[in-house]
Length: 89
Image (cartoon, rainbow, N blue to C red):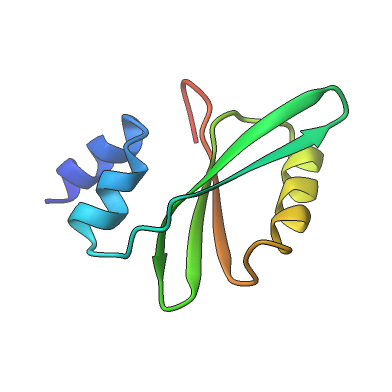
């Protein structure tokens, strides 16, 4: 089972991971955060007991990640933010 879950993570299939495999609730929300000249697309893929999982579909540097996390606080107090670049997350 863990191989299947890791494969979902590696394939950036976070909705399938949280909703289908872990039975979390769907929460279709999106956010766009502009940082400097770059816009970051974020998607809330799942929610469980008030904890929202957000996915940022690129991998900004650490200072940008901290700022994005601070801005997401307006959307959801309890959150997990996954930064997912093409080759890593």
